Length: 335
Image 1 (cartoon, rainbow, N blue to C red):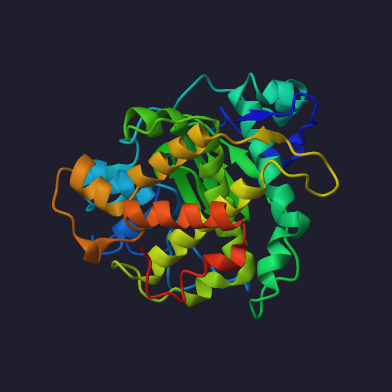
Image 2 (image 1 turned 45 degrees about the vertical axis):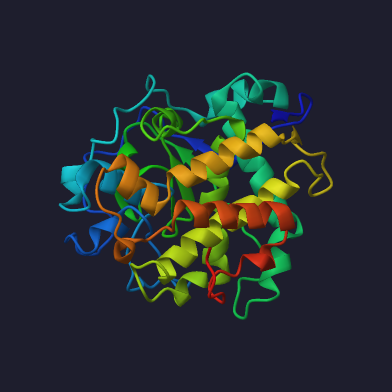
């Protein structure tokens, strides 16, 4: 996967807070931190569009739950997990203006990780704002009428959000309290070194597309459907698999023009797809519990779906390119 060298990047969709820090980690959100809720703690923090906190208080992250299971055994408190996933990566550097001067074109995205992430964010939001969101919103009663762009915040080590404080151990996450996506870019190295993923440009983009999928769910009001928190066919699993599917839908459209502008991404190869599916499978509940954690696989504790399920729904999104095919809540066959 490469970026069009001549494409213009929009760094206004990114806030670069690296080096500023957010203080020590505290409990994320307002939920209890007992062993029964902890597997969800680093998984989702949802609240309704009305602004009222919902009953399920969890942070939206790609692998937060898996980090807990792998490193913390799925028990304890947020403070016992904080800082154990990996050291903050890279030298501290803050300043969105610096990012704007460094990331101007697709050529910059082809040579610098920061700029590639900017390009990914631009591409993802161009798809959803360019008709992708409307294609599914028209089928959902009570959905927000249009897609609303939200920024991604780059941070190093720790950050403070309206969903609470978090550190790099949480992985990337979407906070509906302030409508922002957060990521410590060292996560990409951790995904390869600790989870054994192959990595690559599309894998990096998939991580963000999954988080923006949660933003789409927030706009659609999908979180209101979440009732069961754990289990192989729980609503939490269905929510995560749907976000994977939405990420796949974007992948199908990524190399197509959007909003009257040429595509930022010039092509996605079979090798790119294979590495992305590999990454999705490595953050399946069963893989983490059985392979990385070295423990017994317990379907009753699942919150994100199995490796096979994550592959199925990511692939469903990519092969159909149709967000309406991502209705994981109506099917009896999650894969």
